[in-house]
Length: 175
Ligand SMILES: [Zn+2]
Ligand SMILES: [Zn+2]
Image (cartoon, rainbow, N blue to C red):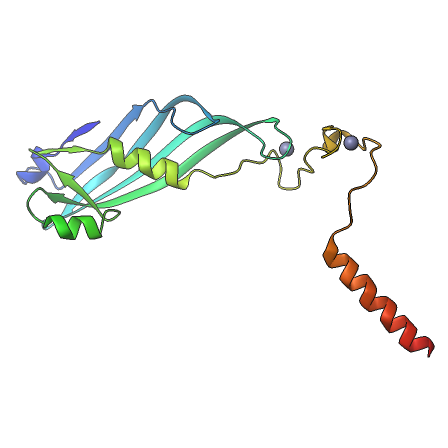
């Protein structure tokens, strides 16, 4: 979306509402249901322009442990200082890529930055629930649906150390 900021640059308004939607399907293994919604404003405070947006959408993904579908709502804040082209040097912009959005010919194209923000903020791993027990590593059965009957996996080596320690204590008590 190219936002027309000319009224803001001409000083006709000091605040511009922003509201638009776009389609996006670049998150691996995740389907975005409907469009991505972008909502917020750009405020000009005596030449200092600040853009504050909220990005939100509904999605369907997959639990990283049990592979069940996971439906959720995602939203994240997106804030940038808006500068007209030529205001900052190439170097200043490169050193602060996450800080600025640059106006070109009176328009601000935010698509690329919004896409980057989504990919950066979206959770790497989705879970159907915080304590999803996942699948049995032997037979592949969903452990959330009950025991599968397979032999229990190797005990955690950290417990083995604790057990040794407590046995040693007991021996010392007996001596
Ligand atoms: Zn799960
Ligand atoms: Zn099993």
